[in-house]
Image 1 (tube, helix red, strand yellow):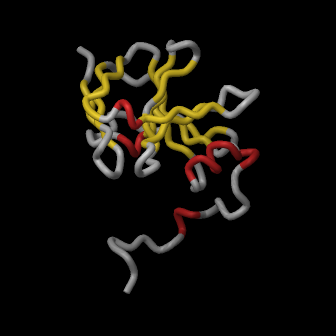
Image 2 (cartoon, one colour):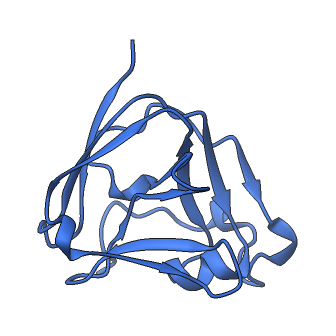
Length: 135
């Protein structure tokens, strides 16, 4: 039985539903993913069978493909939050894990493109873990 997930952008203008299962979950450290997330890596779920349905704000979704590449990012035109997108002529659904409001049902499969990870991205698990903003 396939699963159902809901998600949204930060401002709440865009909401979506995904029906189906995710086959893979990768943490990508390539320079393009670091640029479009502003972080150490992108955390994306992948499915070749799940279906995406926009519940609200589809007209606020902007899709950008870096020229001469297959690197694609969808985002809310109001708040900039990363959103799901279809790639490979619609055969692959890519979902930023942080865009889901539902729990993510699988753990990451692997860190990928670690040969190009940020120079400050090492031993991060050794840093103090605080429950809130430090005082």
